[in-house]
Image 1: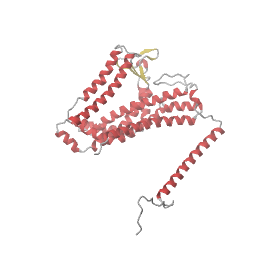
Image 2: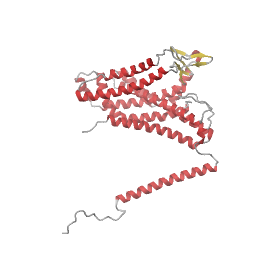
Image 3: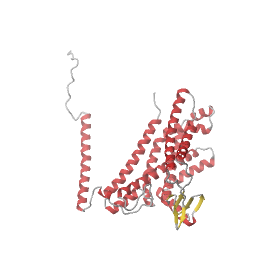
Image 4: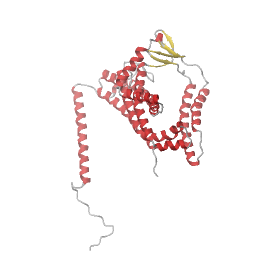
Length: 395
């Protein structure tokens, strides 16, 4: 028998189509070439058509004067500002309705989902009715209904409803008091954000301490104290001003204070009510996915039903509901583009106005796509990070 020499290299096999690795490489190269050809063909065809019609391309229009007004925004804007600033206003308006909508829809959906499992017959049936009704009515139709309710059924500014001091409800929207432009309220806002961060840090420390020593720490009370106490401390450091900018009736409308337009209120209400129906079912299914033995064990240890739900059931259900909940957050964000139907100046509405005035259709559509892609991918990345953080670690 021939002996093999130690350290000798095996002879190289000749390249053959029978080798799966070679075939796989060829398929990938062919697929990549096909994609590149399609991109080249579409790009060259688009450029040729634009040149034939003498349509200008590029991003230089962003620095030109916009020349149109925007009804509301988080930053100052006037018709003399550039298209770029107008688009920034649209992005911020989209982010505002998306962030507030996600928070409110999560709270409402969680409450309704838990209510569907209630032993109270009336409460469970009302929650089921809510889910079945609002999930099966198209969102666009709901937006029209809410907008009609707010703009048509509410009285004019002179006859505005005044349910609380300084708050007025009319067909022009909701007017409410706002803090003046004082450093004290800036300090209070910074204190509130810092309080939330410290509350999370304390909660994590308390949980690690509990696992290590078995000793509990009132992290809930401590976090609440930080979230409430730090803003108060910032307000006191800033001089503790007590006056507010109150809305007042002058002429045919209110001046001063803050306002929520009928368009924003209708859009936010429609998105929250519609999305909460789906979130409710996700929460309900997540709770039902937790073994009944967990509930029985918690009750046998003397925990109340509320403590069992908060400390045992929901933390385990969260691992089940977090991924489908991400889809609903993305859907809510993308559904906010329906704002154009009721006149809310989101990024879609402002980009449409921009491309109609400038003729930069490709750039306008590209801006809309990039904005929603950036927002959606940010939400998905955050939720995936959180999902990995709460996932069980196998030993």
